[in-house]
Length: 127
Image (tube, rainbow, N blue to C red):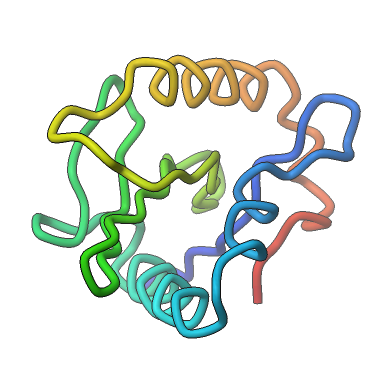
C-alpha cells in the first residue's frame, strides 16, 4: 500500500497554520483523539467513510471527531504525491456546517493549488 503523509495547510506567506492552531488550543485528550483519527485517515489512504468523514464540496472533506457532546470538524483534501492537507478546524454548534467555515476551507484549498511548492519540502508534515 502506498504511504500517505499528513500536512498542515500553510498560508502563501509560509507562516500561518490555522488547523495546527485550532488543534493546539484544544484540551490534550481531544488533541489525542484528533491525531488518532488523522493517523487513521493517513493509514487508510486519505479516504474514510461515514461516520469518520463526510464530503463537503469539490475535493474537500471533513473529518468528524466527537468528544463528549462537542463535535470537532477538520477540513482536509488529498493532494499530489499522496499528501493529505489539513486545512482548518472548528467546533460544530449547529446541524448545518457553517458557510463561513466552508468558504474559509475553499480559500485555503485555492491557496494550496496556487502554491504547491510550499508542500514539497515537507516543512508542514505531521509525524
